Amino acid sequence: MNISQVADRTGLPPKTIRYYEEIGLVSPARRDNGYRDYAENDLHNLAFLGRARSLGFSIEDCRALLALYTDRERTSAEVRAIAQEHLKQIEAKIAELQAMQDTLSGLVASCHGDSRHDCPILADLAAEKAD
Amino acid sequence: MNISQVADRTGLPPKTIRYYEEIGLVSPARRDNGYRDYAENDLHNLAFLGRARSLGFSIEDCRALLALYTDRERTSAEVRAIAQEHLKQIEAKIAELQAMQDTLSGLVASCHGDSRHDCPILADLAAEKAD
DNA sequence: ATAGGGCTTCCAGTCACTGGAAGGTCAAGA
DNA sequence: TCTTGACCTTCCAGTGACTGGAAGCCCTAT
Image 1 (tube, rainbow over the protein chains, first blue to last red):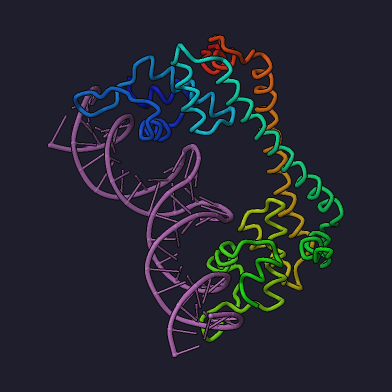
Image 2: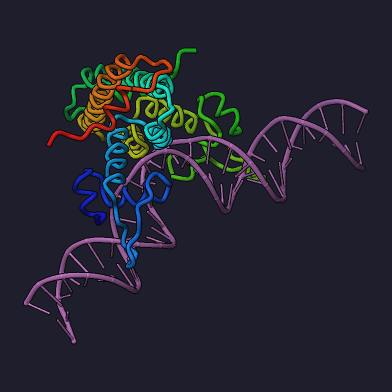
């Protein structure tokens, strides 16, 4: 199977698929003309990677998860540890963004946003920290 | 004022302060020996940048906000537009992360996480999409 | 024979820093 | 005076996960 068909079936751009090969996540066969030739198993692994990426796992997490996936001896504890750590990071990121959101929405609400020159947003940004 | 004092007073690392100069956000004077010499105004602008960055504004947003800050003729509408657009992005990002969080926390909860080999997390990642 | 689309590789750019190397400068102490 | 150590400087490279673009080969249809 050619790369553009794999792209269609996995939803991943061809560039990304080539990149995943470059960093050793997949190793499709090659035809005599040099074209990549993807087997069903490659397709399956790429779909796995796409799904893991869409859940926000890093490439290195994806590499580990894919290795665990193909390892019959792995324990579910190993997988869960990765997922739980990732979940923790996501929760931390959400909290950070929500703090920004709180501050920003307050500032946006307090700014009349018209043609006048005074602006509470800039005033806040410029405020000296209380020592 | 030397760079390390500015770093102490703004909370920004010296590397970052030099980087901000490289991309034209600040332009401190130089001493005869080549050392950067920061005035109070530079310090103030760097603190402004640090605060804006901590609210998640991109460098280009920060550049625009700093320009507006020093522009007596600016309107609060211009500032508010930048902040509101940024707020929208933050809200979108939060929604995206929360979707990941929902899925992941469900998967983590469903995985017993012991020495057994079956794992709902991997099963989900490997699942074929319903066509 | 040619036109087009698809495939290949390689290089550079993204964003906002961050680490490290190589070397100049300054103030304090022996 | 010399040395030590903490500063400061510039420059180069790397981060993560792609993405865009150029140059050129391959394949199929007309």
